Length: 252
Image (spheres, rainbow, N blue to C red):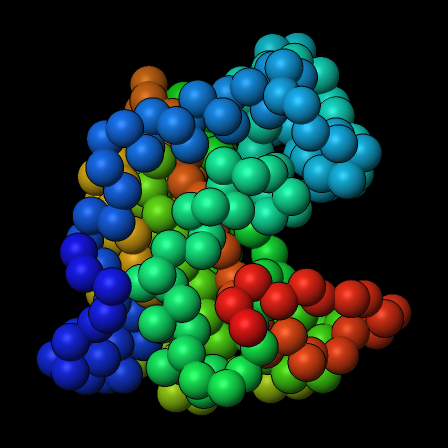
């Protein structure tokens, strides 16, 4: 795809709260990212593991670990690995010109944009944690980040737990009393009984632009194939967190 979105694409995004971007990675670029994350999971990467948030999925004789700093053993069975902006291969992808133009459109051309969360997500074969419907919010921030880019590294299908989204739900906070963004049981029941989600089935290298308030969730993986993905949340670099954190600008 090009380095900017068309007027029609922006209109679709504003109406839906998400936009399928199509292919943003070549096959070689997908291979580079998947090979790199395999190196990280197997403990073979030259990276400071003490600065990576890592969570091991259940299986291989282990229960699911906590999501904490540090290496949890050599395995391809990780559920999440966070702080990948520290890795040069993933950082280079995060800085693609198309993502800069999207961030400038959403936050303003003169706003410094930082990364709040750069995270590998994995639903290993026949595993994968179910993610209940929610809107992405964080209780420790003084303002909500609004922009996420979600990129498939494996085929994402209904069978292996692709992301499910509800169109148009980005316009309001469903449960504003909960700063973490999770819906009540009654809200989920009302949503799922009366509406059908859009299943974001994607091929490797395809990406989706998501408004963080768009209600989304996913099921576990019922297939023999993993469902790996990379998610980046871009934020206003002047966001204040409690306790205080420093957010380094990606796009100045």
